[in-house]
Each structure stands twice: as C-alpha cells, then as structure tokens.
Length: 186
Image (cartoon, rainbow, N blue to C red; front, side):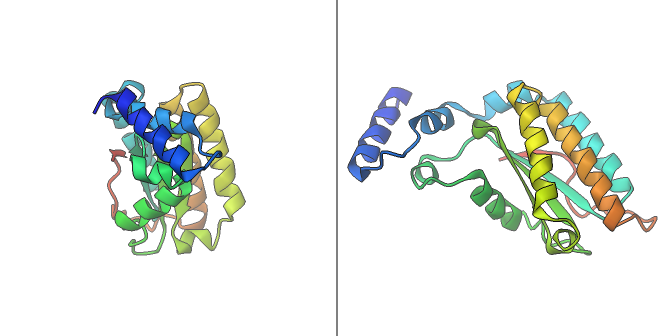
C-alpha cells in the first residue's frame, strides 16, 4: 500500500474514532521513519563507538547497560496513542534486562521517530537512584538528538549511567557481561 493511501486510511480511522486530539504529525513521522533513517544517523561505525562506550562503562561496575533503538511504532500502537515510555517497559521485559545477577540492568530506549529516549532501570538500581536522575539524563540526551547528535547523546548517556552504576554497584574485579553491549535496532 502506498504511503499516501496509508495516510488516507489513518485519517479515516481517526475521523471514525472522533479523536480530535490524535497527533497526525506523529503518525506521518512514524510511517516515514524506517531502519534506513536510523542507519543514516547511526551508521555501523557509530554503533561500534557506542558499544565501546558501554564496554568501558561496564568495566567499573557490576551494572549492565543495554541500548535499543526502535525506528518507529506500527500503526496500531500509534492509533492507541502508545508512548515511548510504554514501549520501553515492554522492551525492558522482552529483552530480560531485569534478569541480571545483581538486579542492576539499565535499558536506554530510543524511539527514533519521536526523538524520545527512556531509561528503565531494574529494581536494584532504582532503589538507589530516583526517577529525577533518569529524567535529567533523558533530557540531556534528547537535547543532543534535537541537534542531530545521536551518537554523542547516546555516548554521553552511557557514560553518565556508567558513573551512577559504578557509585552504587562498583566492580568486584571480575566482570561478567550479562547483556549485549552493542546497540540493537528493533
């Protein structure tokens, strides 16, 4: 189905629902954002550097950092007005970021079409670090994303989270890598 036809269907569905608050700009942005859009902003070389930042951060801590980039949401979740936060919780669960030895996994989730980032921390980390800290890191990362600096924003976020994890879950000298270090596009 051509993109213009999809937009027409979406408009019809929105009209049938009578939801005047539906953000059509968001729907169109998600329909046009795909894997290639992400790859232009975050090529393999950038993923290599981000992966290295995760590895360096994890050397100082028992904590685990997982990065997931999702290009866009499918149409149904968009029509249901799903947020990046909702999706981050799903991804956190699906990828078992919570299943680390010390309950110290942290997910950085980037919903590329919205330029929205969410940080979801396992209960062990969250007990030490309040939501305000995660929100501040997300804001800093989103500011970088707004200026097109996706790699820099992700690396800065990883470094900050690494310092926080090192403060609360310092390395025991023996690092066990429980989660993949390389960012994943889903």
